Image (cartoon, rainbow, N blue to C red):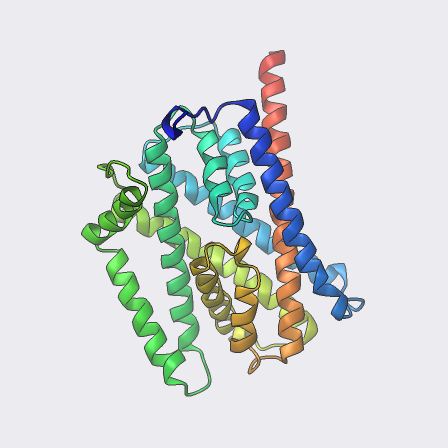
Length: 310
């Protein structure tokens, strides 16, 4: 049975996906919690954690809103409750090495649509997320207080080059179609407008600023920081995220982002605080993803029961 004939609507596929995602998330959590034992978290209160959790959650909801803008531009249609369940559940799917779980879960939400179009939407989202991260990092480098040519000159110049390349329509089409050629699929003819990509990128920048603020709040709970450091902390967080994206077979970028932040942020706060804050950010992010996945699944189930009863 070939991939094209494979039914993603089958109950078996859903069960297999659930087991894989659950196993990946459990492994991720075990590794993250394994690092907690070395530090004392007794001084951290809910007052410190809840604002960060709320900001992370709001960022994911905002990202879903702009994902719907992107899918609409590709002509993908799904009820909002089903699309929401697939989107938030797929956030957990990225903990499967290779990010294949993310693709398969979203594919099931648009099972009546072309798999190629769904894949193109995901690739475009990936590009928009990278563009947003690049812009956030560039903004952060403007506020770096140290005279480091690598951070203040060469890094933003390189990222601007990437931005210019990805926003060129011809290059963007080639990048997207390169993925289809790699997997021996027919190149895509339908692409979102650059205006749509810029809109989605802007939305993802807002998500990035919210998540960066969450990380800043966590750092600030250990050591009082000037608000002027917020763009630097956010830029460093998303530079680490970009490196984590490159490490595609690292589940959720585990270990990669932490290492980058450990190098970048000691001039802002102590190394120990960086490590503790990164672990907390990881755990709160996972908690937010589990929360949104659970809530969206309950809403979807309730909606189906309401329609059935009606």
